[in-house]
Length: 477
Ligand SMILES: Cc1cc2nc3c(=O)[nH]c(=O)nc-3n(C[C@H](O)[C@H](O)[C@H](O)COP(=O)(O)OP(=O)(O)OC[C@H]3O[C@@H](n4cnc5c(N)ncnc54)[C@H](O)[C@@H]3O)c2cc1C
Image (cartoon, rainbow, N blue to C red):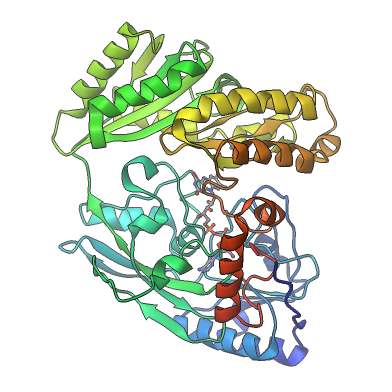
């Protein structure tokens, strides 16, 4: 692991950085306006910084990094501050500069004929989707945080979300990238080429590097044709064992038209029914496991008959007990809102220990069973609340505190709980981070579970591109 020797910024450096962005866009320590840049969504990490800089252009980002590189001062990139592993928050030492992309919000170009869009890093995913929609197209990266999460952060974390089954992760949406390297040079490759085999894929190296190899300032993303028909259904299953056979049936019948297959445990449904601002489609008859599935087709009036036929067969085969098909766009939106609230509603049940893991799809039910035994062993009475993107083998294995337990005492078992869950994941050929990344939270786990050769390669790349280790120090590696 890398332990860079960095310098706290001098007053002269702080002044120089302030001059680059202008006083109005430089937020000093003690200014209440700093608050939103130092605290993450779950309040797990609260950092400190002498200065938050908010550049308005790539040229300003270049100058900031040139100055910090020369001074050997750490810089923490931040876009929408919705990351869930603490990567965008500075350490409590108060010696790192935060570089926020929140002023870089231009959509530079939309090419409807070429199916591409070029935007700056601080544009929210929702705004990219809206711009694509206005051009009659679709941007296929969607997640519950899309109103705040930005293009820069989504690419830096190679975010997943709700459309991965059909369209892949963030990486699959990107054609070109513009990023500023640690020494202030710009890697300007905003290409819209679909084919380019000229050596190492540096674009894909920067995507998913969580701000440790460069600061993404803009990207050219791929757009797709919007489907002509979309059918959404909510189904109750008789048991977790029906999950994989139902997924297989849905794939066989819908082929590439199956655009979502999300699963929710009974406890996740219980929490959302209790605390969510949504109506649950089947009332309290959601069963031991529920699924939200969606079929999208390029032909009009095709998705609805497909989903009806598929659900009828599932009922015949005993793979589900009941289902509701959304009858309007409003009902579709309500079903998705229910799914999107899964994480948020757990706050009402006290402390929650989170895991974002992936497994071979067919082994998800086995994982859920074995993990439940681990939870009971590590903290008797703790309540597993799993849900996730079954089609991607991605389980959000969250664990809520026992009813009436002390929150702090429960959160104190985070490390032993996570270690035991991650050991199971590793034993089942899974990954300890499916889509949220490593950041600060999983740095030690990465050291433990990543192949040592892969870790050596990562450290060599980091040292080559950022020899002083100024970019997001103490994160990932
Ligand atoms: C309610 C909720 C639901 C979520 N659902 C999902 C989901 O379904 N799938 C999923 O993958 N994630 C999900 N997330 C996590 C989060 O939204 C994603 O990781 C998102 O991509 C982060 O984007 P951001 O702009 O907020 O990045 P930030 O939080 O600002 O940063 C995230 C990381 O990227 C780095 N970074 C930020 N901007 C840049 C940049 N321009 N250049 C280089 N590095 C940068 C930061 O240093 C940090 O390490 C969810 C979060 C919440 C709160």
